Length: 429
Ligand SMILES: *Cc1c(COP(=O)(O)O)cnc(C)c1O
Image 1 (spheres, rainbow, N blue to C red):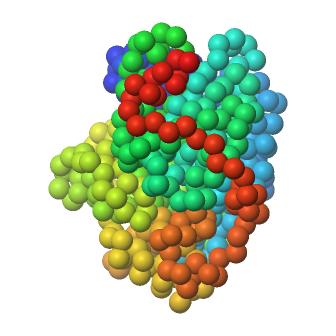
Image 2 (cartoon, protein in one colour):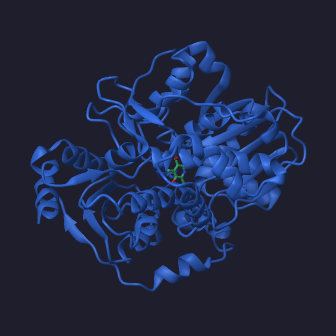
């Protein structure tokens, strides 16, 4: 499979090159040249297939012959070694729990898949690759855990000092080996700005191969297609209209759902549910797409003012606004509404959601005011990772999972930086 840049100003590349580069030289996102739907019978008979088989069928056209079939199947089995349960929260409303992986964030699957692909490519690529990521919390932990011990890859994670939860900080500062953390005196946007600057700084990129591990990278983005098929497989009745509500920040996860739909998975409609960072809901209302600086909320993994994957969504809908509006609805919710939703889910349905999942749930409730459908929201992180913003009474009911217990006792190791020059000399050292 060949990938082209959505800025149309760079040569086409192989899967391998797209994974190693992350972003095209013209700064466009890579996009697959073709998307071939699978046989309808595959989806009709989906419950005869294991998760690993489903994942293989969905991803194989995008990898092509660049990873041998047996190796790709081993990678998938290794990546998907935990559950993805669909839990009925109330009649016709389900939560797809994506937090049962090693760092309890949905980003585990993409990060692990990308790391294993790079590890495979590094067998023949003698050059060391440095993965540079900025995180507002969840990405850093998933990337650190996914890449731990991968030969030929160094990982440098920038996170805003004092702005991530204690658990999140431990997850990204305690692993050691090829994972290093930089604690930035600033906010997430400062971390992001430094990373962007480094990617454009030829005095760095001439000396080392930098790549990103956020959802602009196709190997982190595409495996997220699997979730939607895993949910579909668990539905008892597939004859009803099916709607997914996705808590969205950079719109990578929802865009992966649309790739699954293009591959033939019968999804009727998507809801992008978000916080006060509402470029997309505003766009669907007004037709005006206006990126903004992000505002801080209690669902901070979605504090994104200029979602990087939205261009891929536009592409998938042929840049046709009406077509897009028929497939995508989008709603924004305040922190107060989010807190209330967490409270209602707990009081009325005995379900503890994290703030992101709660926003996904709110999106469904809003949609169902005027529509009828079977709806699934993605629960993108375990609530334990957002304890400081969960009502103490509910928080006290959350059991500490093993994955989290194991990092809490470890010692934090991070280098403090405050300006770009410090990042630069750190990388060049
Ligand atoms: C990253 C993240 C999101 C947003 O996902 P996108 O693919 O960026 O839209 C939502 N919830 C949680 C918990 C996350 O970590």
